[in-house]
Amino acid sequence: MDKRIVAVAIVVAVAVAGYFAYTQFFQQTPQEKVLIIARTNKPSSLDPAYIVWTNDYAIGANIYSTLIGYKPGTREMYGDLAESWEVSENGTVYIFHLRKGVKFHKGYGELKASDVKFTFERILDPKTNARYPDFFKSIDHIEVIDDYTIKFVLKYPDSAFLTYIAPWRNSFIVSQKAVEELGKDFSFNPVGTGPFMFESWDSETGDVVLVANPDYYGEKPKVDKVIYKVIEDPYTAYLALERGEVDIVTLDTSISGLLERAKSNPNIKVYEKISGGSLSLTFNLKHPILKDVRVRRAIAYAINKTEI
Image (cartoon, rainbow, N blue to C red):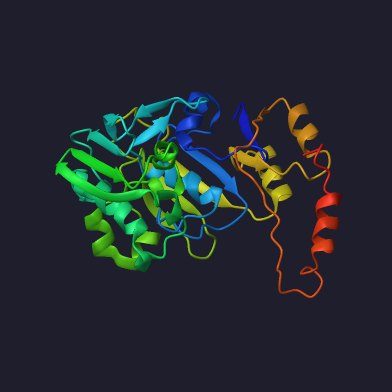
């Protein structure tokens, strides 16, 4: 290949759709265009109710769709599964008008408002034990007006509501029929409406393979297949990039000299972006040392906040 892409560790993983502009860099064969993305850990789940890690979210963002999305590189929202929406004057009622003819993968039928209702009610149901139900705690109830119109009624005005139903781990819309038919197996056989369809998940290696969705309602994928290859050691993953065995890695900038090495390689293109994520330090207050507030204050004082 002529060029390869390095996604630096300080960036947030994004959907493959975000890489389409760079398809001229990817290794191809006359028969099939394949994109190989290295990741350092095995997926935990591909069910939106249980997705936790950013790496899993990146896979999910290619399998599923959301009601609304963000224009690349901006915080400007646009309609994805929803063609349009309106908000009541008091900010407690949101009505979304869905695209018609959107098909779920693998013959699970057309997306309907009932699937949207099911998606969010499933997240809010304590029996589901979803990972992030609190993001939707402002929802009072959801009404299906017709097959292509869905209404969210909030308990109170929530200025962050649209942000939470935009691309996010829990906001991926699922097929009610698929979830009910597959049960617990849905985590390992996900069905969405996104640009790529799930093909396989190797239980031993953790590698996940997606294939292009020929029925995708948006811009058609420019690669035929995406392989998420697990290479647990970040330095080994980088060497695989240099050898042309993978097309994209997330660069671990804690490895001394690795970023400079990548930038100096004419066959590698580096993209850097400030992350929108955060890290937190949580104390076990039952620990005999950490329960002393003076110890916690000392740790807080030792953190170089200026450098952060």
